[in-house]
Structures are given as C-alpha cells and as structure tokens.
Length: 267
Image (cartoon, rainbow, N blue to C red; front, side):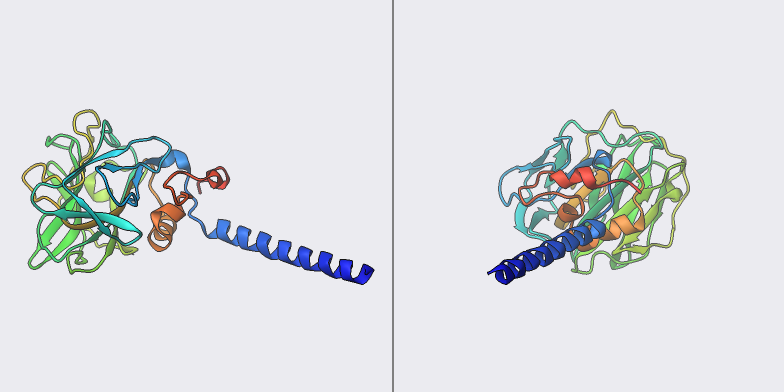
C-alpha cells in the first residue's frame, strides 16, 4: 500500500513538473509587449454587429460602417467593398508629434489601388499620418506618408494572399523616411521623398478604410489591426504575425486582456 501511494505521489510530481515547464515555455514564447503601449487592438472576432471591440485596456471600441464579417487570417475579419466601407476608432486621434509608434495589420486583396489602411491627422504639411497602398504597375506596396513626403517598400501586397504589414516609427526619429516598413516580417527597401513630421493628434479620428485625401477606399480583407505608442522590435512584430495578435498580447478568447499581462514586460 505504501509503495502504491509513493507511486501516485511520484506521478503527481512528474505531471506538475511537465505542466510548469509548459507554462514557462509558453510565457517565454509570448510577445514581450507592455499593455500600456497598446493604443487600440481590434481582433474582429465578434463575427457580427457594427462595433469592433478594443482588446486593449483603453476601451476604444471602433464603429464599423458597411464592412462585413467573414473568415479571416485569425478567426473572423472585416471585408471591405471598396466603395464606402470604413472603421473609425471613436474619439481616438492617434499618436502625435514625433512620438514613436507602430501600426500592424493583416491584408488580403487582388485589387491594385491606393487602399486606405490606417489614417489620422489633417491633410496639412507634416501633420497627416497616412498608411496606404503605393501603386506600382500591377502591384501595390506598403506606404506611409505625410503631406509632402512618403516612404514605401517594394513587396507586392495585392496578390490575393494574406500579408502582414507593420509600420514602425522609431524613437528619436523626426522624418517620414525614418520609418521601418515590414511585409511578412521582411524589412522593406526605403523609397520615397523625405519630409519632417509633426503628426496632428487633435483633428482627425483614426480611420481604417476611408479614402481621406482623395486616395481609394480599402477593398479586400482586413484583420488584426493595432496601434502602439512604441517602436516594436522585429521579434515582437514576428510574435504578433506568427501567434496572432490576441495570443501575442495575452488576450483571452473573449477578446479581453488576460491576467498574464502582469507577467509581460517590455524589452
């Protein structure tokens, strides 16, 4: 009997060790991102309705206009018709000045046009902050622009496949070509026209889809978009790309920040 009890105890210890090891491994593999750096994060996993729930601690839910829920890269996403669909981060006007920032999202489309992805600020010199598609022949590239300057990459993101896009404005930067652009984790070659930045964060709410400043409405599938007030590293971006935004940020299946945020630190 004593040997039986001892055997059961030993099995329990082994199982506890395995569970603990898996937990630690999961924590180490998670993105190292501070919850306070997330301005908003939309997972689009509601599957219905006209409200995009903000998974950050800020509660900046988005107002959906026209776009429909369909199967996405992770869970469900929004499908834009290219005519008048839009998403607005209600009462949120973006990151301002020359403060660091990172914007991430997934996109899928075969349509070559100046897709309007994420935009804020007025169309004034240096003040606007627009992330959109740059048309190059039959292809389109990831592009960020201010009034009078721009920075765009070379990889085609309008080939009918899902592509992960990340636009990083590093700390200490002051001009549009200081941005680092990533497509599917690949750093893009910088092209464009240099221009100093001073993003206005008081006039224009963040729009995702609207053709602001005579570009084109977004046409295609849009998933897992977030804006951060820091310059994420490539490792962090790849964690978001590979694990999905929800898992990388420690969000539970209901779209809320999970308690393991307390265990996640910045680099």
